[in-house]
Length: 341
Image: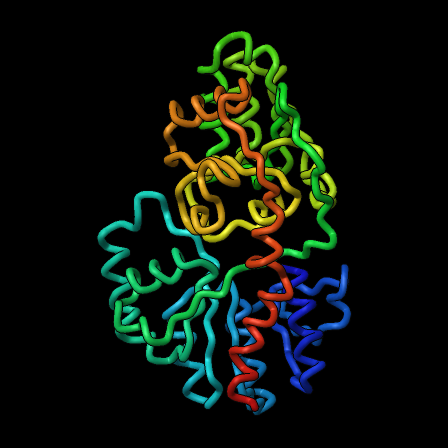
């Protein structure tokens, strides 16, 4: 989201719109130094914002939230002192098996009480919009909108051609249980011995589940199949070195790594969760399998490795047309420009 924040701020300035940013921490990397940022190490972002507004009698025209829980008393508190139009952007993935009954009821109640204090709900995929309506009530449909995430194509190196024999795979993911990499290990374990001796899967990323994954790889003696490379800041240059990206995730909202991989002309093998199926068409620019279905994943891996399944199209074109960062920025800007002018 860094690039989105930087480009959105730049576009706002070009349209004579001043933006104050409230983040948990201050950062000067990239173009963050160009942003007018307020942080507070003691208070949450929400409380820091409320305190700032009360102390400075600030009157904003628009208040836009990202990565903030929807339909909470925070939004009610905003409307107590501000006439600003409130736009809440939902980036949050949902659990694979849904919320507990108690949590579902709690969200419905919050939707009744606090949704009135949010003027526009933005989902980063059609899936997200459906989940907003499911969580907080179908009465919100008139004020919901989908704005897809986007990536900077110019910085992503595109693969010229794929290996026709012995494709190589990468995973680009935070290493936590919900990302399902343990399912991938189980699927590789089920592959024919000849493929297991040859297949190469490189994992980029870090996280709290790394040791459990390493232990499982050792348990199945698959050390020659997997290689952990840690977190890399230049994945935009790395994707193109591979033939397929694997993302066996259990929960997703709308994955930037999928967009980046496709923009690098690297097809994606992923699950049917979140907004994945809105960008990956199985058999066209990748393959979709049911989350946690290890046998299904194993079969796709086997077919792709043996050449029984293959993707021929250049997957970059779809991203260029529908999921670019400039398009994302423009669509977010329209939320305010349409009323400002």
